[in-house]
Amino acid sequence: MSIFLLNLLLALTWAALTGSFEPVNLVFGFLLAYGVLWVVFRSLKPNRYFRTLPRVLEFVLFFVWELITANIRLALTILSPKMRLRPAVVSVPLELHSQAGVVLLANLVTLTPGTLALDISSDQKVLYIHTLWLEDAEQFRRDVKQGYERRVKEIFEG
Image (cartoon, rainbow, N blue to C red; front, side):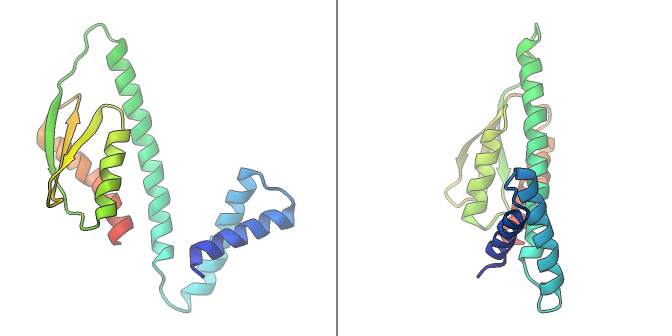
C-alpha cells in the first residue's frame, strides 16, 4: 500500500474516531497522520513521499497566490480608462523531461488570467506563451522558469 493511501486511511480513521467529517477535521487528521507516518518511516528508509507532499502544498499555495494577483491585475486593466496592454508571444525553453510535467505547466499557464499556452514544440523543449503584458521577454521567461517550471520539476522529477 502506498504511503499516501495509508495517510488518507489514517485521516479517515481519525475523522471516524472523533465523529466529525468536517473538512477542518479531515485536514487535521491528514496532517496528524502525516506526522505519525514521518516518525515511523524516517527510521526505516528515506521515502520520496515525505519530500514531495510539502512541495505539492507549497506549489498549491504559490499557484493560488499567482491566480489571485493575475485576476486583480486583469480586473484593474479592464476597469482602467486606458488599457495598458502589451500583447506578445514568448518562447520559453523547457528543462522538464516528464511529459506530465510539461502538460501540467502548459495547463497552469493557461489557467492564469492574462496568459495562454499556445503550443509546445514537437520535441517538448519549448513552450510558446501568449501574454497580455510583456515588459521584458527575458524577465517573463525567468518568471515562468523560476515560478512555475522549477516547482513542477521538483514535484515530477524530484
